[in-house]
Length: 78
Ligand SMILES: [Zn+2]
Image 1 (cartoon, rainbow, N blue to C red):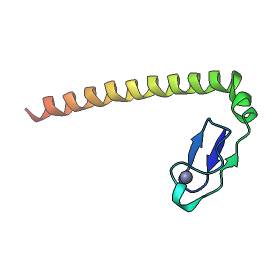
Image 2: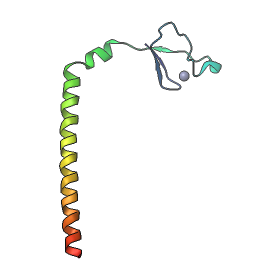
Image 3: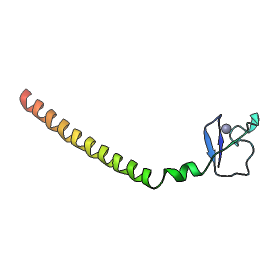
Image 4: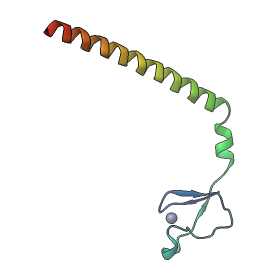
């Protein structure tokens, strides 16, 4: 995995020496440690999944309450 600091792009092809997007400027690519990604899984991924699920539930609750509140407000107006 290679990384270009200029355009913030990642490239799977390790044989690349210059960024295909910044070819004209011959910018060097930086090596990216794949272990970083592997450390992310699986515990962190499950945590992220659980957190996003909780966030989704909270958002759904807020939406329902918001609609309820709006309907109550509208009923009060008419
Ligand atoms: Zn680039």
